[in-house]
Image 1 (cartoon, rainbow, N blue to C red):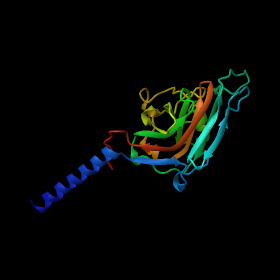
Image 2: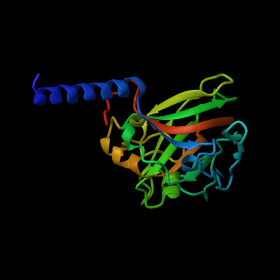
Image 3: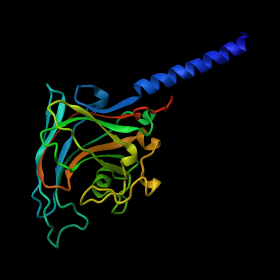
Image 4: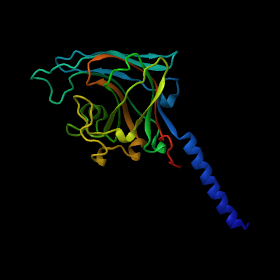
Amino acid sequence: MQLPEMKSTLARASWLVVTLVTLTFGIEVKLVTFDGTDATSHHFDEWEDPVMGSRSYGNWTVDAAGQFGRLRGVVTVAPRPATSIPHASPGYVDVGTDGPFPDASLAGLGDLVLMVRSTTPKFKGFRVAFASGAKFPTYACKAGGSLPLSSGCWKAMFMVPAGTEFAEVRVPLNTFSDKWDPQTGMARKTCEMDASVCPSVEALKRIQRIELWAEGYSGDIDLQFQSISVASSVGSSFVV
């Protein structure tokens, strides 16, 4: 075999190895952990529905020994008085943190991955959101594109499986939208309806803020999570 042919063969073999490794193991970029790692350790603040008539409340704690964060509380969907803020949620609790976060674009448009458990797995109103390129990230993650200058915060729903152990929950990035209803957290436009509301690989490079929500349904809530990351989809052929 001539040298040029050998180099070409080695190059193809190297590409195949990288592809197979990526297909088998995928790429995962940790954004949030509670294990003391500097790049992924963040301070979370707990928020409650501030509008008059709210009957929702929450409590945020960090279990340093167990290396997880915990949001507990009660969400009550309450009718709003006529003087309340337009588009205001009828009840929610959430926690959020600002970046900087690691560049997650290498994982491509795969999944946002949560390691979670809950003593209230039947609650249907768990949501996760992240902001990128937003002029005011916290504001964007409250208004969801329904008010001026509030685009750039993508939100999606997720369910937590029953059980006492932490479980991996994968939320496909193509289920996120930055046009959602502030009263329920549900998308007004989906990726299938309008590609402009979908997150992009570019957005994953500079995530500004991450939030976890309980909203839209009444009930006790207990959400515990060990980590948040972005990972290539199972079976993805994304290659770097």
